[in-house]
Length: 149
Ligand code: IDP
Image (cartoon, protein in one colour):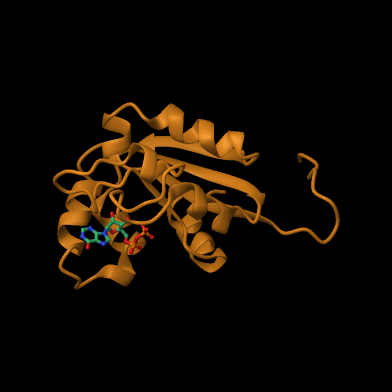
């Protein structure tokens, strides 16, 4: 097993990062992963796959019943996504900062969504990336996407 580079008492976490189908289709996988690595996070696992509706219904269970749920599941299963297990000091919150606010139009410049997200059409749905919103969500999502890890 690889030795952790972190000092004692520091909080190394894992989070699930997804490059959504719009990000893969637009050729932004490298750019997203570049930002993750440039921040100092480590890629633990990486996979290109088209998620099933079954996986997505579990992943987005908290949104079931909302008006955007069905279109979101349809979009997310429309083509390949890149799923990554990312590790690093406070990386759950840290990747959320890198990603920026949900809506690309108002996401801050310097963030993935603010710099690269589009401002037309389905801009809120097609916001390039997903990142787990808490360490608890990360554990739940990582078990869904990478059960063998
Ligand atoms: P987050 O991805 O920034 O954590 P959540 O509120 O957890 O945002 O929503 C999950 C995903 O659902 C968003 O990333 C986006 O793709 C989609 N979504 C959220 N709100 C809307 C909406 O109002 N319209 C369309 N899609 C939405």
